[in-house]
Length: 161
Image 1 (spheres, rainbow, N blue to C red):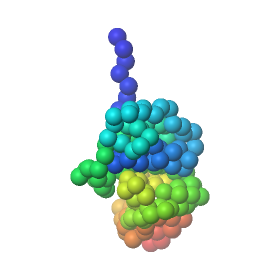
Image 2 (image 1 turned 135 degrees about the vertical axis):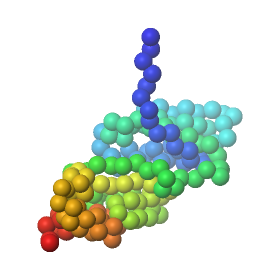
Image 3 (image 1 turned 60 degrees about the vertical axis):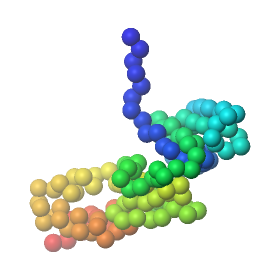
Protein backbone atom coordinates (compact mmCIF):
# COMPACT_ATOMS: atom_id res chain seq x y z
CA UNK A 1 0.00 0.00 0.00
CA UNK A 2 1.34 3.42 -0.96
CA UNK A 3 1.89 5.84 1.91
CA UNK A 4 0.19 9.15 1.22
CA UNK A 5 2.27 12.30 1.59
CA UNK A 6 2.01 14.46 4.66
CA UNK A 7 -0.10 17.60 4.76
CA UNK A 8 1.49 20.68 3.26
CA UNK A 9 0.30 24.22 2.44
CA UNK A 10 -1.13 24.95 -1.00
CA UNK A 11 -1.07 28.65 -1.85
CA UNK A 12 -3.23 30.42 -4.47
CA UNK A 13 -1.58 33.25 -6.39
CA UNK A 14 -3.09 35.24 -9.24
CA UNK A 15 -0.06 34.63 -11.48
CA UNK A 16 3.04 35.03 -9.28
CA UNK A 17 3.47 31.43 -8.10
CA UNK A 18 6.90 30.84 -9.62
CA UNK A 19 8.17 34.31 -8.69
CA UNK A 20 6.97 33.85 -5.10
CA UNK A 21 8.50 30.37 -4.83
CA UNK A 22 11.83 31.69 -6.12
CA UNK A 23 11.69 34.50 -3.57
CA UNK A 24 10.86 32.19 -0.66
CA UNK A 25 13.64 29.71 -1.47
CA UNK A 26 16.08 32.64 -1.58
CA UNK A 27 15.06 33.66 1.96
CA UNK A 28 15.22 30.31 3.77
CA UNK A 29 18.20 27.94 3.96
CA UNK A 30 17.86 24.34 2.84
CA UNK A 31 15.20 25.31 0.32
CA UNK A 32 14.61 24.48 -3.33
CA UNK A 33 12.11 24.47 -6.14
CA UNK A 34 11.31 20.83 -6.89
CA UNK A 35 8.98 21.08 -9.87
CA UNK A 36 7.21 23.54 -12.13
CA UNK A 37 4.15 22.32 -14.01
CA UNK A 38 3.42 24.27 -17.20
CA UNK A 39 0.42 24.00 -19.49
CA UNK A 40 -0.15 25.92 -22.70
CA UNK A 41 -3.88 26.27 -22.10
CA UNK A 42 -3.56 27.26 -18.45
CA UNK A 43 -5.24 30.41 -17.09
CA UNK A 44 -1.83 31.62 -16.00
CA UNK A 45 0.92 33.94 -17.20
CA UNK A 46 2.44 33.75 -20.65
CA UNK A 47 4.97 31.17 -19.44
CA UNK A 48 2.14 28.70 -18.70
CA UNK A 49 3.13 28.05 -15.07
CA UNK A 50 0.28 26.37 -13.25
CA UNK A 51 1.78 24.76 -10.13
CA UNK A 52 5.16 25.16 -8.44
CA UNK A 53 6.29 22.62 -5.85
CA UNK A 54 8.97 23.87 -3.49
CA UNK A 55 10.55 23.13 -0.12
CA UNK A 56 11.31 25.72 2.55
CA UNK A 57 13.81 24.40 5.08
CA UNK A 58 12.29 20.92 4.88
CA UNK A 59 8.61 21.90 4.56
CA UNK A 60 6.96 21.14 1.24
CA UNK A 61 4.57 23.69 -0.26
CA UNK A 62 2.80 24.12 -3.55
CA UNK A 63 1.82 27.35 -5.26
CA UNK A 64 -0.91 27.67 -7.87
CA UNK A 65 -1.39 30.33 -10.50
CA UNK A 66 -5.17 30.34 -10.26
CA UNK A 67 -5.77 33.65 -11.95
CA UNK A 68 -7.38 36.69 -10.38
CA UNK A 69 -9.57 35.56 -7.53
CA UNK A 70 -11.76 36.87 -4.80
CA UNK A 71 -9.72 34.58 -2.51
CA UNK A 72 -6.83 36.61 -1.07
CA UNK A 73 -4.35 35.78 1.65
CA UNK A 74 -5.23 37.10 5.09
CA UNK A 75 -4.09 36.71 8.67
CA UNK A 76 -6.45 33.80 9.33
CA UNK A 77 -3.68 31.58 7.95
CA UNK A 78 0.00 32.23 8.47
CA UNK A 79 3.30 30.40 8.28
CA UNK A 80 5.05 30.30 11.65
CA UNK A 81 8.84 30.31 11.65
CA UNK A 82 10.63 29.35 14.87
CA UNK A 83 14.04 31.02 15.14
CA UNK A 84 16.91 30.74 17.61
CA UNK A 85 18.46 34.22 17.53
CA UNK A 86 17.67 37.89 17.20
CA UNK A 87 19.86 37.96 14.08
CA UNK A 88 17.53 35.39 12.47
CA UNK A 89 14.48 37.46 13.43
CA UNK A 90 16.07 40.60 12.01
CA UNK A 91 17.13 38.89 8.77
CA UNK A 92 13.78 37.23 8.08
CA UNK A 93 11.85 40.36 9.04
CA UNK A 94 13.92 42.50 6.68
CA UNK A 95 13.67 40.05 3.77
CA UNK A 96 9.97 39.24 4.14
CA UNK A 97 8.81 42.85 4.58
CA UNK A 98 10.98 44.16 1.71
CA UNK A 99 9.51 45.47 -1.54
CA UNK A 100 5.99 46.07 -0.30
CA UNK A 101 5.67 43.72 2.66
CA UNK A 102 4.11 45.09 5.84
CA UNK A 103 5.16 44.69 9.46
CA UNK A 104 2.36 43.58 11.73
CA UNK A 105 1.95 43.24 15.45
CA UNK A 106 3.46 40.73 17.88
CA UNK A 107 5.84 39.06 15.43
CA UNK A 108 3.40 38.93 12.51
CA UNK A 109 4.09 40.37 9.07
CA UNK A 110 2.79 40.20 5.52
CA UNK A 111 5.18 39.67 2.64
CA UNK A 112 4.92 41.45 -0.71
CA UNK A 113 2.48 38.80 -1.94
CA UNK A 114 0.17 39.29 1.04
CA UNK A 115 1.06 35.99 2.75
CA UNK A 116 1.15 36.26 6.55
CA UNK A 117 4.14 35.03 8.54
CA UNK A 118 4.94 34.78 12.25
CA UNK A 119 8.63 35.12 13.14
CA UNK A 120 8.81 33.73 16.67
CA UNK A 121 11.79 32.99 18.93
CA UNK A 122 12.20 29.53 20.38
CA UNK A 123 11.50 29.73 24.11
CA UNK A 124 8.70 32.29 23.95
CA UNK A 125 6.19 29.60 24.89
CA UNK A 126 8.12 28.89 28.11
CA UNK A 127 8.08 32.59 28.99
CA UNK A 128 4.35 32.86 28.31
CA UNK A 129 3.53 29.76 30.37
CA UNK A 130 5.86 30.55 33.27
CA UNK A 131 4.35 29.31 36.55
CA UNK A 132 4.92 32.84 37.86
CA UNK A 133 1.85 34.39 36.25
CA UNK A 134 3.06 37.94 36.89
CA UNK A 135 6.22 37.14 34.92
CA UNK A 136 4.21 35.56 32.08
CA UNK A 137 1.84 38.55 32.01
CA UNK A 138 4.75 41.01 31.76
CA UNK A 139 6.08 39.07 28.76
CA UNK A 140 2.65 39.09 27.12
CA UNK A 141 2.24 42.82 27.67
CA UNK A 142 5.67 43.47 26.14
CA UNK A 143 4.92 41.18 23.20
CA UNK A 144 1.60 42.90 22.46
CA UNK A 145 3.22 46.31 21.89
CA UNK A 146 6.03 44.99 19.68
CA UNK A 147 5.96 44.65 15.93
CA UNK A 148 9.16 42.68 15.24
CA UNK A 149 9.88 40.67 18.37
CA UNK A 150 12.96 41.52 20.40
CA UNK A 151 14.25 38.57 22.42
CA UNK A 152 16.28 40.68 24.88
CA UNK A 153 13.30 42.97 25.59
CA UNK A 154 11.00 39.99 26.16
CA UNK A 155 13.45 38.50 28.67
CA UNK A 156 13.90 41.90 30.31
CA UNK A 157 10.12 42.20 30.69
CA UNK A 158 10.04 38.77 32.30
CA UNK A 159 12.79 39.65 34.74
CA UNK A 160 11.53 43.10 35.84
CA UNK A 161 9.14 42.99 38.67
